[in-house]
Length: 204
Image 1 (cartoon, helix red, strand yellow):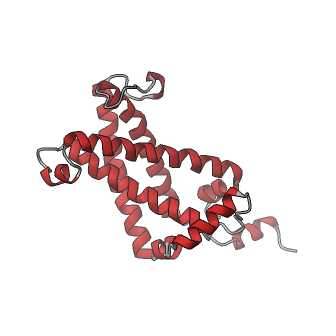
Image 2 (tube, rainbow, N blue to C red):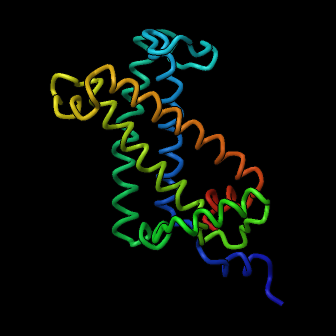
């Protein structure tokens, strides 16, 4: 009878090392950017509310900007590596595509009835595909709208694509809000299926 250690070694790799490293670095960068971004938002709110100071990072506007820009570079370079590795390895097409609206609706209905299965960690259902593709596009939108805000004069094309500086701030805010919702749902799903966390930590 094979030992538990040998059984562990025989388990297929669900997430390669490069994916796990870039995933956790992206998560770190995103959390820092959200918390510091809330402090930056409080310095000049665009809506009639403020984020509680206890939920923000940076202590003051200057400190928040330093945290935000540091995490921005981590997100950009690590995100580019993530996309390059996913594309070059073929994982992007294998895991996330094709994405068919009919399958998304079917799996969404199953999820609402509590019948959506998670039997295989190396296969994403249509709802997961939509969520991951959406968050990748959302992160790209965050970077583009962020550049339109940060370097509005240097990147007038980006600013104009956003509809001007003020609209770029609104786009940036709602892209951030979508990301926060994604994180909350993602954490809840991990709590419901904890072996997904183990796979992202161990790869198997």
